[in-house]
Amino acid sequence: MAIQIILVMEADEQSRSDYIYISSILDLWYDFRVRSDIKISRVFMDGKGNYNKKKIVKKIDRAIKEYRNGDSHVVYCFDTDKFDSNPDDLRVLQEEQKYCDENGYDFVWFCHDIEEVFLGASVSKNKKTDKAKEYIVNNGVNKLDKGDFIAETISKKRSNLVKVLEKYLVKNN
Amino acid sequence: MDFVAYLLNMRITGIKCIEKEIRIDFYGKNIDKDFNPEKYRIKGIYGENGSGKSAIVAAVDIVRRFIFEENYLRDIQQQSLLNELINKKNKEFVFCCEFITNIESRLIFEYELRLRFEDSSEEIYVAFESLKYKENSSKNKQKTLFICENGDFTELIVNEEMKQLIEDKTRNLLLKQSALFSIFSIQSDNNDKKNIFMHYVYATIFFLMLRTHFDREDRHKDYLKKKTPMEKKIKELLMETNTGDSRVPIDSYKQYEEGIKRLEKFVRLFKPNLKKIDIERKENKGFYECELLMDYGEYRVSKEFESTGIKKIMDLYNVFELANLGSIVFIDELDSNINDIYLCRILEYFKYYGKGQVCFTSHNTDPMNVLKDNNKSIDFISKDHRIVPWVKNGHYSPDSSYKNGMIMGLPFNIDATDFIGIFGREG
Image (cartoon, rainbow over the protein chains, first blue to last red):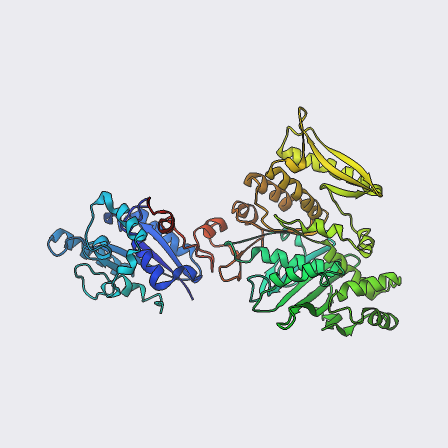
């Protein structure tokens, strides 16, 4: 049975930095390019605050309706930000998780942000794209520890990305 | 509906990357008295690079050449080309099609061909060829005309006297040449015009009406050069067009000249400043060697040095003309070097006013908007070489679904960011 995974990411359409990191994992561990039964659709939120905005919901709905080859799974990918030190960030994170739960979407988190998990440290907003490119060019994916992507609870420099993906994709040997 | 022959469907296995059988339907499954192919005459086949689109056209080309070129399988060059084309894993090329002819009565034929090679010799031979038919409706009982297995007839329906003659004349030959065309030729030479023979004639006419056009290699021209005497006989049954730079028999020159006049009008639609196409001819042993010169008033240019796009348009003219005369034309890479607006307009003509059948492969998605209203007009060939016919999906258009990777087996997961690892290195 074919499946569609709709990745909903914080990055904007132009930089796509989140997708650069996530696709490196899809490539290395799931060999998704040779698979004709896996469709990866991308929705860029252009800021996490837009996660429940009409235009984002519309894009997700369209992808689901247009795909008739099997089930579609929506995977929202969020940075946790300083949830452990800033109550506002904690509240936002809880709201995001609640939204995912209520809509039957998967909730993927990167603690504290995607760069911290993939590069080891956060980067300033204006350097996000360059750092993501650098990561690809330097084969940064080979330095990753798979264990950091199957975390059960939110913790520094870790994520549940692979844990969620493996609900739908079979890992390469 | 006035038609001579119509291709209903075909099944292909074992050519290039196509290991598992693919089936392409041009019409619905049931054929009855209401059969009307009017809205089923154009099909576009879309897919990724390397998905097997050209393999489909190549398969049709092989079958046609096998049937009409007596020495096709005896030619060393063709053998080596076929060795490259036939799937190495399958070691067998299988082509099966159903078609209708509507000449004196309506007949539904099923033709099957299997070309095979063994590891030991790599020599390609005919493992199986058969022709069966039904009368009028697909619900009627199918009858066999012939079955030829490994060079011997296991069934052959002709009159008794003719049967012996055919068996004698084809002994030891049918591993390398078409039984269908052999039966047709022998009966035709012996003036056997009995009812059952005409079935062979109609089937042969169908294959003669089947045409292929490749972007890089015009095999149709090669075929014309190698025309056998028997094909000349069949030519009388069909009006042929040939308007390229050519060797034209002197007695056919007038017809050729008329064809060039029509070509001139056609090209002028795209190049309004073209005044005329001149033919420069040199006589050579009963033929004219003809070169086409494009006259733009202030200057003339040989067709050879025309723009690639205009040359493509001129080449396509021949195949469209054949389609318009009722032929079944397969065109590989229809869109290459041709403006997409022109392309859509030509296809619109065939959709609304044309005759014959046109099946093309393309990467240009614009024609999908021309085709989408007709049934069975768009097929996709998936990454793993399966045929996925377009089925209407709400208000989503086929081109948007295709581009968005929503067609089964064609996820198009590629993203602009994928090129960073390739071109993104600095210094």
